[in-house]
Amino acid sequence: MDKKKVLFVCIHNSARSQIAEAFLNRLGGDRFYAESAGLEPGTVNPLVVQVMKEIGVDISQNKAKSVFDFYTQGKRYNYVITVCDGANSQRCPVFPGIAKRLHWGFEDPAGLSGSDQEKLKTIRKIRDHIKEKIEKFIIQEK
Image 1 (tube, helix red, strand yellow):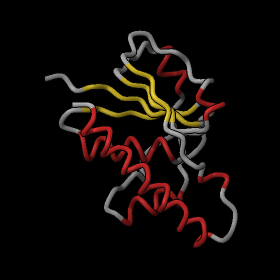
Image 2 (spheres, rainbow, N blue to C red):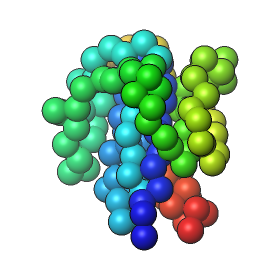
Image 3 (tube, one colour):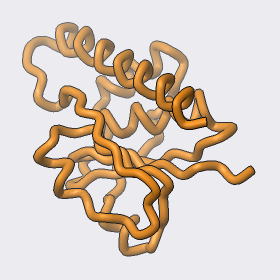
Image 4 (cartoon, rainbow, N blue to C red):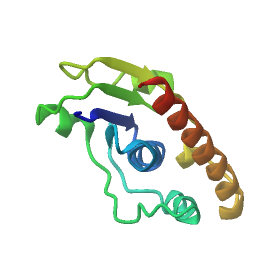
């Protein structure tokens, strides 16, 4: 059986899409192959790396990638899932041959204020919310 290909897209490919990619590949890697990219790629958020490492998932070597590079390479996906806010999800290019385009809005860790400890607390909640969404997706998309 061929794995279903999933692309997670957010603004900078620095947090939410990286988390979603890691969880889908870890939890559903037998049926899905996930990648992630951003509209304006930046660098992977070190606090996100830290909260993922806390649960045994190492994304420290991940790099931010451009959704437009994937598009021009002609990559095809069964699902393109935007994890940014609704307005920015509309900026994502339409990939040919997509079976489904979904939007899952999550708070942006880059927009958090407060101390690192306060940010880590909120990023853990975002991480756990993304994991729950991935688990439901795996069950629903049999």
